[in-house]
Length: 490
Picture 1 (cartoon, helix red, strand yellow):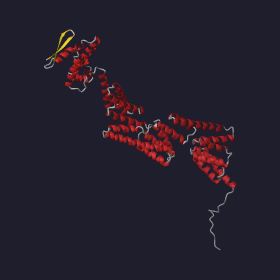
Picture 2: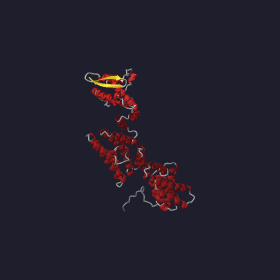
Picture 3: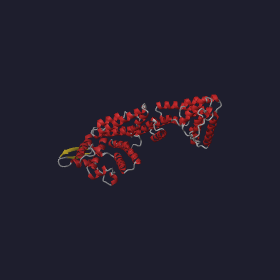
């Protein structure tokens, strides 16, 4: 008879009785409890899982593992265990309480309320359930207020409501995303990016968080990177309408801006002006890009001699972005071109305070000089000539104005008119004295006060007139008596 080999080490598998299984599961549970007390939640989770594997119909084991998962911030898994616990035992009060708490932490306040109401049916005096029910009602109210605030574009109110709601619903990605979106719409991009990044660290496929990341980049004028995030968000959530709209706007805005830039470089200023205007209608929320578009349109406007419109566009750009140095510089130049020197000095001072460069210092000094010069008599205006007028143009202008305002021409006028014309006659002589003398003219053009420079500024308008018109082939002027004048051709 053949001998049968028998492996004593392996031995036959013996089925444990229900009592033995229960004792084994309880042993695992007690070990899990010990680790839980030590706050070693990972090990506690492992032992509660072993207990469940042995006795999968015991509600308290699921309840204990749910508590452990909550301590590990794994709230969705904790919710599943809590729900399984109450399915096994509908009278398991702690199970309903934990389910409600998980719903609340995840932002489902309505479901949480039902769970806490069930707890109060089982235990009417449960103070924790009473408090959590109030928290759930508060979250519902904050959600309602946030919805109204968003519709009214009161994004600060939405952020406030979401901050309050997150005090009880700290794991709610929906609330965090809404807060992040509103922070982006408020221009608080670093805060918005931080919230979205926190979500993506926990859930890299969250389409809403990817959308917010893209939105921040889009509003910071990093359009190419923004489009990449919008596309990624649409891969994760193909029906994400906000991401789809933002992606479309980003592409349209970039294309229109580039068309405007191309037209400007080619010297097609009218076309560039129209293209920048069209780009400004695409997305009013894109503050940074729109600020650049207004400044670009102002640059074109100044080329087209639409200086007041250019100043207005720069002002709009600055209103959108108060740190936009280029807009201050463009507006200051427009102020200079329109001889609004006080406004130009103010803008250049703002620029120089922000960026203390040699160039900005020079621009400020130039504006201050022009302001100083503008407060003196403008001899060029007195003679009616341009600041770049030649010597001959200055002489012709003096001849015309001197004859126009000479007292002899107004001897029959009223005393008031005679006084005014005499004043103008003297100013014309003063202007000619300065602008016809190269040294004085140079000092005047440089902004110097001629009287402070010890230059001889004493003159007699009649003597200047007489000297000017007494040359060969010109006019000579003689006085025939007090207040009487006549001209004599030489």
